[in-house]
Amino acid sequence: MNIGIIGAGNVGGTLGKRWAQNGHRLIFSSREPASEQMRKLLADAGPGARSGSVAETAAASDVLVIATPWPATEEVLKSAGDLSGKILIDATNPLLPGLEGLSVGTTTSAAEQVAVWAGGAKVVKAFNTVGYNIMADSTFGPGRVAMFYCGDDAAAKKTAAALIEELGFEALDAGPLKQSRLLEPFAMLWISLALKHGYSREIGFQFMRR
Image (cartoon, rainbow, N blue to C red):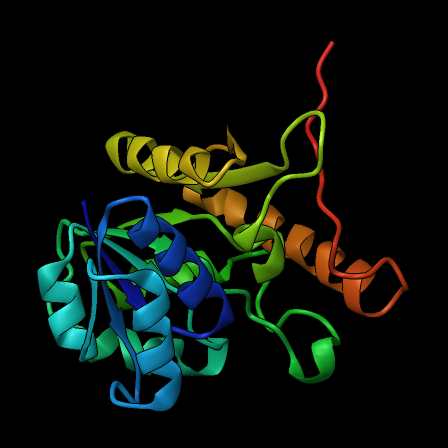
């Protein structure tokens, strides 16, 4: 599969590197595609990875992941060109400065904003509810870490679920895209526990049934 990563920081870089190591063809976009950080990322990802502009990344990819800081997201998506029909996995969270909360919520969500900015894309919310360190290694012992996803296109969600499962998570369909209004505050719970309330970043949630 051709996967494009828009925003090759901690989250995007980690996801892309793991998928590249699993045999997918990756293209990473960055404001500085020739930077030392990008050269190291490409070396770690292997021969199936390359870098390019946002527009090049979008054009060359079957699936895109947007993992930019929230304030940059609208501008970056508008520079991507026509995204009609593209599967776009939204891994952003609309964080306030100092991690004091979310700038969007309750009546809309970051993912719904992304769907507007990326007109025509098949948006799936995923990979926003744990830190990049858990994306790098989701192993905790018995059971798997839950990774919820949501979206309005069934085929796009099926593709996203397969990419989630490939990284060792339990993929859990949370419903339509407006469920992002719940998943983004859920991400804030992980962030606050990990970074402000002493639980450390080495935490995850499991989904239990009976």
